[in-house]
Amino acid sequence: MKVLIVMASLNKAGGTERVGSILANSLSEAGYKITLASISRIDNPFYTINKEIELLSLLSFPNSRLCRIPNTIYKIRKLLKEKNVDTLIAVDALCVQFTLPAILGLTVNHVCWENFNFNSYLGSKKRHKTRQLAARYCDAVVTLTEKDKSYWLQGTQHKEQITAIANFCPFPVQEYIKEENTKIVLAVGRLSHIKGFDMLLEAWLQVNVSVQGWTLKIVGEGEDRVKLTNFIKENKLDDSVELVGSTNDVGKYYEQAEIFCLTSRFEGFGMVLTEALAFGLPIISFDCESGPAEVLKGTNSILVPPNDISQLSASLIELMSNDEHRKTISLKNKKKAEEYQPEKIINQWVDLLESFN
Image 1 (cartoon, rainbow, N blue to C red):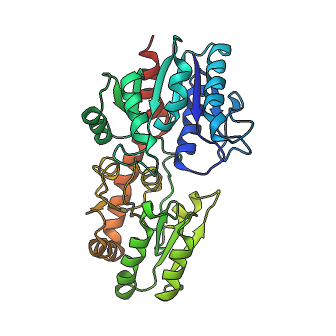
Image 2 (tube, rainbow, N blue to C red):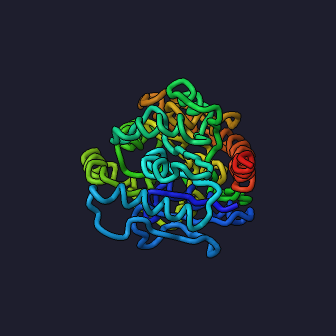
Image 3 (cartoon, rainbow, N blue to C red):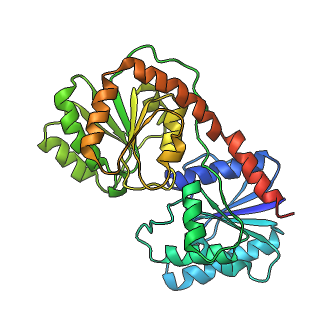
């Protein structure tokens, strides 16, 4: 089967780019002939792409919005015909504005893979419209959680085939056992309002008074760096908080950490949670609308009411003070991480693609 996967970009270090690359690689390894097309120009893919996969840029000339959409639609349609594509996967509902008109009149299966919460728009008014179009006209819509699937079923005029397939975990389940308490709390994500690191720092003010000798490390880069840096300086947290920045080796920070913390205002899934599970890290997470409750079910990790800074700090203090509880959670977390390994998730994608035959 020939599959064309269309993504907005391959240059960024974002979660969508990461799982899109894993999907392409995993389908290729499963025997599918994959073409991976980026709407933006491919300068240097951030994540490794298997050499068997054909990589293409769709937007190779003027960035003018007037020519961008029709030019992209034309190129996708041309690819579908030239490659004799069986199935087209649009990564992110926004891509449907390009893929839907490109596929009109062609006998190609059309899948929309939405990587964001149905109730979030991320600054784009088009997102609601493209979701409605995807639900009505695509052969399948893939959500990341059962909760989000229910939102699609309730909020769209849909076909029957809306299915939930969890994200891949980029890391294998780690076999090592941490022998010493590193006293590091880790958070990973873009330094943006959505990820809630401002609330994490507010909670850390209370933690820092009650528990000594621990360090908070935040791995990631983004538009809120100056704001967060100023808060750290103004509140004299320099000795206990480090803004690490972006890295190509986030694994070493998971290895060093003792606790993982997620403070997002909302999530589509929360892939960093599966990463933390794979390293056996006890997790404290805001129970935001979609993602954490499903990912952490059955692990004994701690869910805190959304945006509840006082409860977040209390939970951190309690877990930081209880070595045995952390060890118990760690074992359960590694077991749960097995559910998100690529070899488990790809079977669900294969079942979906083969259902079109």
